[in-house]
Length: 437
RNA sequence: GUGGGCGUAGCUCAGUUGGUUAGAGCGCCAGGUUGUGGUCCUGGAGGCCGUGGGUUCAAAUCCCACCGCUCACCCCA
Image 1 (cartoon, chains in turn purple, green):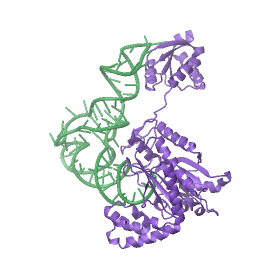
Image 2: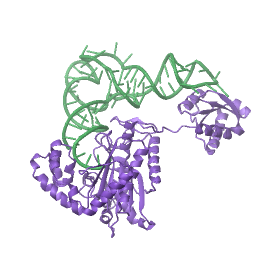
Image 3: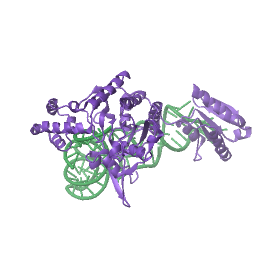
Image 4: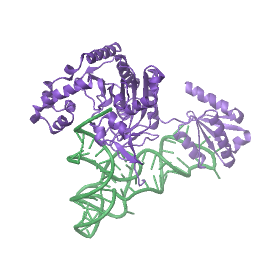
């Protein structure tokens, strides 16, 4: 054991999967690669281009972009100061992407910008199952279109990823928040209503009533939900334009056969959301059931200093929760890539030959493994077996003399002699045949 | 911040009413074959029993404190 271990709320991704102390399976690096590749493939098929922004951003960007009143800014930022600059490890990626869009005048590329990202984010929360201090998100931002088509395309792209990965039992919840002005009116009305029931509310709900009345809608307590039955509805405050937009989104989703349920109580935590809002849940997940969430954020650009409004819509999704859902579904994923050939050497002269030949085979594009410790042939064979190489080359004095390698096909145990001159061609053909089979 | 759970070998876990030198399975290394893997057999390495204190002739075991991990609440991806 080292003196050190990974920071609480972070985790190592190893070549092989393992089970952490919370009994959560941590996927192998090859599985992460596979899932990330699938995400990229689906999004690129939906005509998104990748954007990569720094993990480090100005604290003020997050404070203004995400919202001063949010939990993220209030108590969950990894922020520090260095030589007069305030840094924060990004807690999400939407504000950074909008920052980058504005900074680089990406609207000048022409048309609607469809961007996607994959990468780590950081929040200083209490970790638990499916929730970490360093976690990994992917998502998209569709910037420059206020049309309902953009909302629908965002949602459809999100759903396509979960479909491609074979995740069952997801539930898409949909709502509209309208404009910030109308929402303020609603918040005032909701506060007035809830204050008449203040005595019956729980401590947390009373605290929410103070700070952010919309959050009371999240309550899971039955008697509070009953109180909410009679509460004013956000939808009644939403303006005609917003309702028309919302209807168009719903119609487009229906055209695409995307199932959803409307949830008038779905409000999202971040200040920048307007109009359409949505969340994708998995029944299989437990406490952290949100797989992904998103919505429209037409005011964010101006909050970040843009003169002109920039309409935008996007979603963000959590990789860790995706893996939880994948585990629940028992979806198959790749394991560690195996070598095509293992080369075993016997004796010093053979070892030098093996080194040179390993390089030659690798240059020819083969995945080649060999011993690095001068171990016995038996040990080298065991190693070849453990690494599951389909072919093993055995090279000793006999082979050097004959200028022909012993090629062992591990599955059958059959051995053949292949002249050194033909090795690259022979092995490449064998491996190709195997790959095709 | 508030509750619950858990800390014994690389991993999964036994360890009796406190009682010699702390165990098993898997994994790892080596040998059985001085040129051959998987199956089998044999052997080996690997433990401050989370840390500190206390009780006791004697503590992995009982008591206290601390640390770490974890699940949940809050919030969210």
